[in-house]
Length: 122
Image 1 (tube, one colour):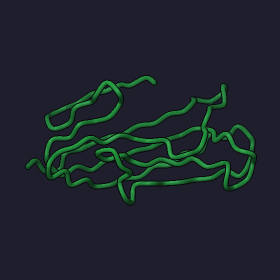
Image 2 (cartoon, one colour; image 1 turned 90 degrees about the vertical axis):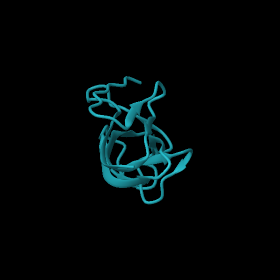
Image 3 (cartoon, rainbow, N blue to C red; image 1 turned 180 degrees about the vertical axis):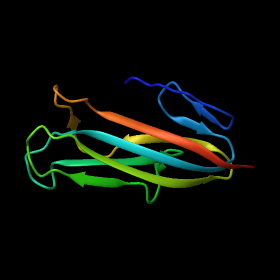
Image 4 (cartoon, rainbow, N blue to C red; image 1 turned 60 degrees about the horizontal axis):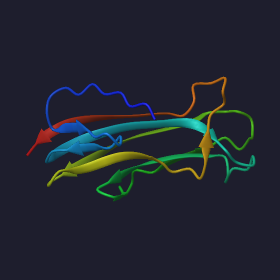
């Protein structure tokens, strides 16, 4: 995985495993995930899904899903924005929620991003 960062300000630290440590405060997290599901062409198997992991567990309300319902090399995309109230700080990670994903070699590949903005510091 290639990880790029450009932190500005304080309260947000990118870790070597791709997770982000947040200092106590309120944050908005914008995230996207794009890739080609490795399914059989049914709505249930051609699923692009992403969610946020907060301190080791799925953040309730963060999971987003989309389906292409075809085995064609289509790269579906999901995106969402959530607010995290990190009263004691914590760690957030963007997770692939699909069973299996790949990428069509003629397209961009599996691409994911997470933008975090501190709204209020505690």
